[in-house]
Image (cartoon, rainbow, N blue to C red; front, side, top):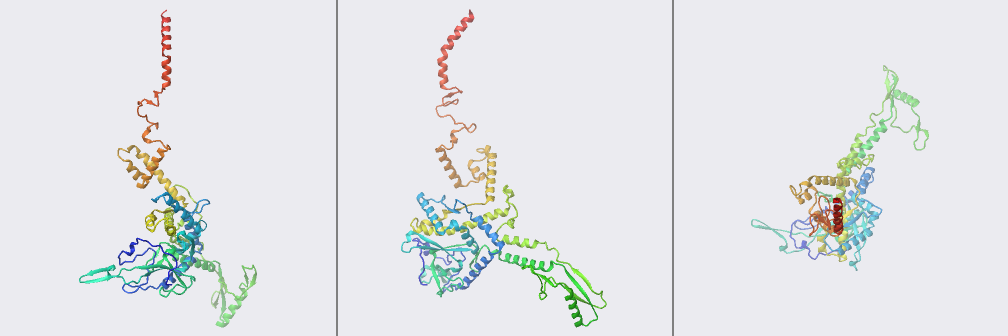
Length: 564
């Protein structure tokens, strides 16, 4: 336990060692648990925290077995991970990365290698589903210690019930200069500058927690932080320092739905049939004789045959009481004698309003549109005005899930590129914000919305176009009407210039905006274009000059003949 298993990537220009702060660095992973001693020391029950996470994950997995929850989970996973026959579910997007084409090519190759190592194209649905249910995912990055420059050799999935992320304060006798001094009047208080070790505890048996870090010798293995890819759901319970799943909100709604359904079944079984009430006249018989007489009459007239639904047999089974039994009541002398009445069955047995309410409540807790309950409604591909707001909200929710899930690829890609010396840790800090991941998209509602928005913008552009240059500038129209960003404007202008140079599109400066015909070049008159004068070519002019003398001679001859 003294030595960490795995590897670590060192940053030469690590600023965290030079920074002074009384507040420790805390990633958004819910791990505020750390063990320390002395001033500001905190002793946290890691075993208790482990047990709580252990029980939470078990509950999440049990919830996923219920039909309603499973249907909602499948809707989320199918929207987030779209499988296609030819395309991969996710690809790396490097259009915003300012790097050479050779670097981009290597990044794409390494990302493709990581997907093949995980077998992501085949198991993408299961990987995303496990991450969504458990609220976290762990992968061990296996490398060759003798040849780390070969990169990641294998990626192995780890059950979250066997792992625990720990943050532990370092014990060091640092100089007072590295601490923080707070002066209050004449007194000066020294506040320590805490530093922490971050690692994982792995145990082979999930039923046995790792226990306290100080005494973690119960089969637990200490693994370095860089050797593990750890991706959480982003939901954190800060009060209890736990990472939650997206199923956490639906725990109460699911329990309520189960209780309502069970009570409904019991009520219908007990109240559905009509039952009879027998009032037996016992006269003036004593209590014991009256009870005996009542039992004799009951045995005489009661149903003696029982139908077995499993075997289809009819048999006598008097020793079992049924909830459909009739009622036998004694009546004393002076009453109306023996009487038989009918107790009506339960009313409003077809009412399912309460069941439907709790179903809608469960789906809202699972962030799935209520319109998808049952799946009876058809799929409408009409205008965006016909699209429910819940579907748009659901589409944004799936987009956030993809963004969060992509952190797993980011960590793996970082390790692979640094180990293979493609980039340095310093370069990666500048590059990681510009590396995006493009998931296959299948949401028709979002496509319809974008298409209709584009049509409206083009319609507004046609309306405002006569006023460009008079009341509106071109830049204003592109930013406010077409909603183009600065980066999009720059990219579009570059593409237009490139297509003009290649001759794909004509140059607007050399084209008549009214007729669309090319404008006259330099040295040509306004009525002259490509050697044409008023629709007559130069060749026609030469023909006219050649025929000129012949026409004049004929004219003179005709005139003389006329005079004669």
